[in-house]
Length: 492
Image (cartoon, rainbow, N blue to C red; front, top):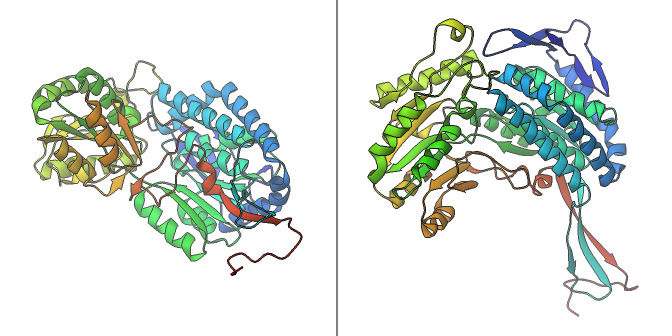
């Protein structure tokens, strides 16, 4: 059954007169899943107006009370987990276990942020003068535009929405067009949790119209964007022209280093999940395998044999290990990288093709792919965002770190070794926002910061207690109770 949604503005679902519509489709079957409004600039303006009008009352509500509403939302997410997980799988294409995991991550984060309503700490420090008290407090930034991607269509929206709301901001949310159904159901949860009208608004449609209107509206105070690097540059530039606060979470080219002393079976299982989970469509996906020469051939043989046994098919079938890629555009881009690898002389070990025949012909299914490559070739340096693993051979740990760091990204990294000294050297030397030891490059926990360096973003972090930094301003407060004029930094 095809679901139909309008825009959610000021607490009401509306379909503007003469609205243009678009739909989302399953990448595994091609069936239509939902119909949505292609919002106009005027629609975005109405959503921002609703958010501005709701801001004073929401900001004035004590943060623990805001947390109660978030906790109610988390409970509803938990009640609807099975249904929402299926929608994630149907609309985005990741296998059902990962679709449910997407929703579980949303539950975990919203619960965590609900607790931040009773923490939200500032700091107190001693004054240089007697009879004077010094402290900082956090205050909301105002109206937040949350612009999210299609690969984690319930988790990432909640990373932004829950953190912005607990801090006292109001939100205008634009989901990726291809996963608008998941975005709409996220908003319905908050509506059913009792969020006041106008505090969260949904506008669906293209980045060129909806995204642009949010970036240029002077009443929007902060922008939180997750997506590709080139789009991120445009978001940053447009937001900067309005002196807005802009937080970017962008791409990755994440390495897994496996040294001679590693527990190989553990490294292999981690690699399979890191490289081919969600069909490689994660910013934290393991895109490069860096193998020390002593185990190179042995490990490759095990890897190829295991990859060729991966079950690819209907993502709603619990026995499947990989589903389709998310769209025809994604499929075309990934196949283009496979062709580029062949032209550069990279050695195809397995995969390298579109899967055809039977149910495969209805969707965007690619074979899990492994190439032996040379550092500097395109598939060793550029983000592919698909089920393509580039394998590189190195002589030793020092070369492994040099190769791992020699890319434009710095999100996640991984090393497998039994040597604790080497592990801590890797933690110190790998240029990434996240480093895993004896685990793959994915699997963030919501109570810790998430983000990276270089072209992965512009320095901020999501999740953990630092998530509030993206959505709050720091106010410094001085209370002088001495009863006389005191002049700091004036000679006494």
